[in-house]
Length: 355
Image (cartoon, rainbow, N blue to C red):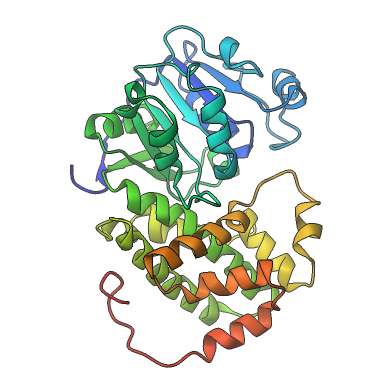
């Protein structure tokens, strides 16, 4: 399969979809699928009865206030009830650090024979494993040939508003990637490409969240476009080095999951990770920031696991290391930036070959 190949046109949506997760992106993907026709049923598996009741009452006030829930969406807290017969697509929209627990608890409950698509963007603390790797490790072999990953620049609110959004679906099985891309592409607003670079797309999705924290800090320190452009470029070099070290061919870094998502999350306050960085630069502590929101900023935890993986693979990632030091060692963002700028000079080199 060629990397990032387009899947043209609109295709029939799955008639029955299970979305595991009740956050903003889970709601956005559920809504995009629900809008596809009167015969489309989307079931959302919620973590709490409060959010379940909010969704079934017409508005997810906890995670996506201000948007009416589509009539084709129904929420549950029981996976047995949510998994109606003939589910055709499963989307796992669970924060990375909670994914393994869900898989272990429900490994016998998930439907067999349909694509299972993980939408989390992170690396697990302790194991340094990606969501796809966790699925391979925890779910029985009968599921493995149906796994895929969905990534790319896709703010939930813009999907809800029907704005043009392009994503990429990666799988080790080309037929699965194509099927999922056809399912989620609606022919107008949401368009999917396919890829076989699972390693690269997952690493890109994880590392860009860490880099978005750095970008938010730059904004909070009132630095301008020069600084952000340098961060995006040098950050892209870091995530590419790590992706290649894990087995990626590196080409996906120039695509939607790489430079696309990096540009998005490093330039907008809609990004939770960007907002965390900006608040850190204003003087707020991580505990203060975390206590003021229901949403999960994946980059906060991922900064730990990226550091672990980079050390394990002997990959130099100075920006990500600086973010870790700000988050967990109390270093001031301004000091971290000054130290990055004072590093020894060197050749820029190519993104893939550079060490």
